[in-house]
Image 1: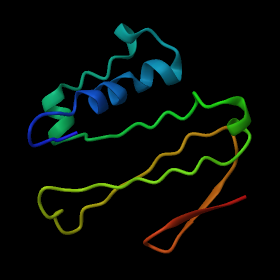
Image 2: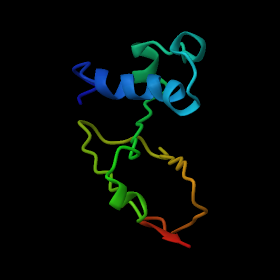
Image 3: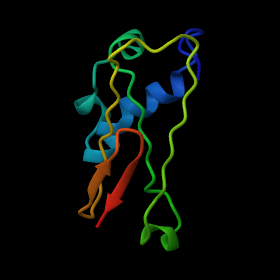
Length: 103
């Protein structure tokens, strides 16, 4: 994707469809009412749905790595957040650079 060239429709669609998929509610009722422009400027969320894995993998830990390249320097004091929705209880520990899971 490329936000500068307005090539982000896939990630916008994933973020917009999250509520419908997660809560199993009709899209008309659960519409987030976020325009592509608002998504780009105010709410650049990325949704990673790992529920479509083979059954063998569902009983193990899913390793997710996110790598990003930016066309400009990221502003100072920028923050990134991760929301993990799981049916297992996990504890996340971070050293400020990497995050690990403790059971």
